[in-house]
Amino acid sequence: MDHKQIQIPRRQFLRQAAAAMAVPLLPAAAARAAADKGYPDAPIKVIVPFSPGGPTDLMARTIGKPLGLDLKQPVIVYNKPGGGGAIALGETRNAAADGYTLAFPSIQAVTNPALRSDFPFDMEHDFTGITVVGYIAHVMVVKADFAAKDLKEFVAMAKASPHPYAYGSSGNGSSGNLAMEMFKDRAGIALTHVPYRGSGPAVQDLLSGQIQTMFLDTTTAIPLLQAKKLRALAVAPAKRSMVLPDVPTIAEQGYPGFDIHAWYGLLARSGTPAPIIDTLYRATRDALRDPGVLKTFHSLGIEPGGNTPQEFNALIRADLRSWSSVINKLGLKIS
Image (cartoon, rainbow, N blue to C red; front, side, top):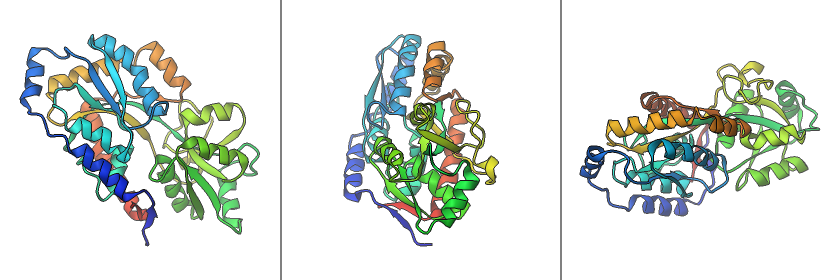
């Protein structure tokens, strides 16, 4: 199969990745000292690899306050977009392994190693998981007046169309892009990818009829579904979303095994002492039980996480392998 080149400026990515790797590593002795004198005794930095206002940023800021209250230190969120997440991950990887600099990546952290041949990190060994903070389902949507009322009708219409339908995404290599590539492969339909810089412009073109469909995260989709501007055809996870319980899954509609779950979680540099990881895990787990956090998450279409560090690390390993298999099968690469 010919590789489908996802066009992202290679020189820009390499420049950003190199910058992320340029900071010299701090000695592990700093981490041991932090553990010995009582953690934490200084503010904690959480680095989000996306711009302010998106789902990841909102999630990080929502848990930041109760997390800080529990740890008795400020939790400060910094936005460091760029390099497919390499900037944020690089700053965490090159900080001391003392629990004061954490990364807050999305599932993109486990898809990029397969998509980008020059991705500069070993996600299994350079980082250690603390916990998944939240899951956001992706929902396949069409304009509210689109003729197809369910996935079966959409597939039939796509196959009958003399020209391929166009689908949008928030960018090359995004979860929405990968989800639709997986779906069109399973459904045996031709769809033309139109990448945008963010979901906002893509939604505008969907509403105007310039594109016919896309996968949206529930945070973005729910207000548009409630306003009856869009209609949901299916959700991508294997199980129905708790925030869209009436929308059937893709697997339910004739594609068994289809399962895309988008997680967002906290990572520390590998080598961070286990007591510090445990402190961060327990504080985050408790923050995720806070009624205010749960209310905000539900309003944003976010399902709370809270798995153990061991479970999160196992998820990272499993997703690295499964996404590598899928991406290689589909022939998707970023160049």
